[in-house]
Length: 142
Image (tube, rainbow, N blue to C red; front, side, top):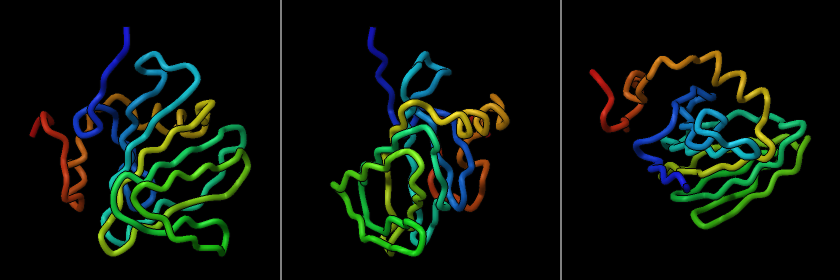
């Protein structure tokens, strides 16, 4: 049976750079070959450049605009853009003046990201537990 998830209510928050990435699809819900993350960026927020040695990364710019960073190169991106990143390619993003939201998919799941998520533990942290975030997750305990 399929699983239907809401990016605004489901998932596990994980601090990454200036942002909180919400891990929506992972091994925790039974996914074996893919992970899906949803990240909202405030204006100017940066997801640091990094490399997935074994994973392909597909980023869908859901709302807003910003830049894809590849080393020193900055390429403008905006809502509706789909970015394909091959394994071993350095990449990161910076949100523009209106902020940005990105849905990212990796296959196979990146072992480094999975390790970070495990180390963060099942603490049930809500995004609002980071007070500098202006958006929260409904249903979080106070």
